[in-house]
Length: 308
Image (cartoon, rainbow, N blue to C red; front, side, top):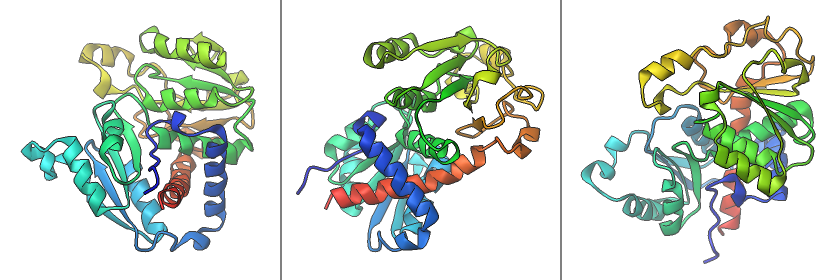
């Protein structure tokens, strides 16, 4: 049996592999009928130990659109883990019942552990505040579609940059591509972790500009990536209540933005993007969610092909 390849974090993929997945996802988007039965007879185990709407159903939709089948759960209380079974045992058994496993887990590192015992490819659907590699692929294919490439952009990340695993994964990956610059917009309490900034600076020479208001940088941005203030990551409610309305994007806020800037968001949103923004042609966050299905189709077919 060939060594099974897993996707636990974006660093598991080379730049050329990322670009290949994006190209394949774009081809699936343009020609979905060509891929409608490429996974016929295959089974994907969808194991979500933590609630998710977009990621779980995006993966399930991807596999079904490829002609495959889906088994699994969206509530860990309905699995044998509620009886005390270890994660390793659950994954070992499920890898006998399926051809590929997608899992989300609240504990950082759980997908890595799963990859050490699984007989089939493991895809990390998000682990705690650590990594969310397929959201990164979703973000990259969206930038590619609307901006034409994933290089030489000024990208503004706004909101909870401390806890946002989607931000951490995306900024690490975009740093690997030529000419991207980053403007970080957050309250002091929610800044990008110093350890991550140090790592990116040392590894890629990444440079950051940090500000606390969108107004001072809006006209410079090619991509604005908004994020939710994540209530579930705060240790006390008082801090959350103080910071939850730090950024609310309105038509006035983007009045001096570039005409071809795009506004992204991993969703779900709370109130950080006003509903009036939805009608602005620069808003692509719903299309971003849609593109996630196609790049996940590309990932599933690629990992299954490599596992033969």
